Image (tube, rainbow, N blue to C red):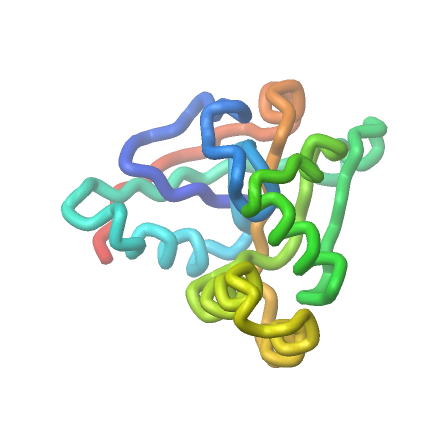
Amino acid sequence: MKVYHVSTSIVSNPLAAVGRKHLDFGQGFYVTDLEEQAVSWANRPANAGLPKVLNTYELDLDAIRASGFRYKLFTAYDTEWLDFVVANRKGGNLWEDYDIIEGGIANDRVFNTIELYLAGLIPTEEPLKKLRYEQPNNQICILRQSIIDKHLHFIESKSITT
């Protein structure tokens, strides 16, 4: 499958262990199979005034699954996804049980709901009620360098304007 990663530079040789640990799916190299979503990540305030580069790769997800890597797929915004993301964002390490994780991203609307939940301002049922109406986007977090080296192949990069 074709996947995308936005950066401020060309990333032809991605690294799994250089990102922050306390993200949705842990410390890894994040890609998405949705080009529009990747481009929208370029619009984050942290990227203001910086160059924006859309890096494109080929990811052999079938080979990864067949190779015995520990693959976790979240198919919906549900209690399992919420607990996993919240635990990781609070400093947990649930992500360390997997080699690759795929599922919905906590985008701006979802992130606000999670922040209220993390702060203890709303009970568990409330974010799940709100999240039920969100269409999950998709992110894939590759947590092991061996997967990147063998199953993620750089295709091209191009500058984008937002």
